[in-house]
Length: 171
Image (cartoon, rainbow, N blue to C red; front, side, top):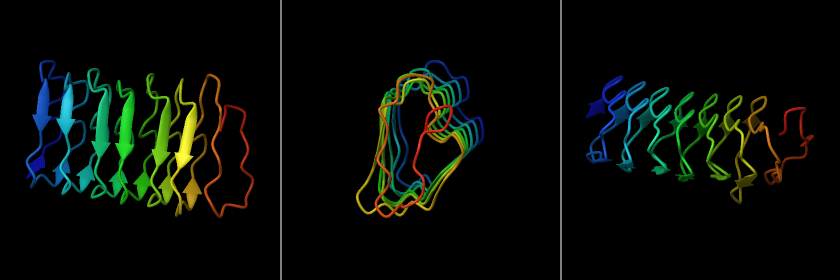
């Protein structure tokens, strides 16, 4: 089962949705600007398209299963997420995937993540980044953790011996 592009886009009255266990992909913009409040993503989900939850104004918390290998570009950008759990198994976080989340204060990056795209977590209030023990991180894009307010920082993932310093906009 696939949820098509823009399937629930701008659907304002969508309180709760549990995806069937056999759902494999959610298309581009599927819940963009929607009022979905509660969404349960199944463990078999493989693909999240671009802008899937962009500007989803009532979605405050979500768990992304490890079966999703890539969190696509702008996937959650501008949504109201306050809490997100990323499960072990995710390998890539796309460009601005969590950009401009006004209520997200902290994030834990699973050890399975290898690549973080440009501006992936850029936003006004991100203050804490934790990399799981045994991190396999290989690259971090420009301004990936850039923020516009106080930033308490992050510790370099285990094994990183390169420059790990704040840039002009924050980390």
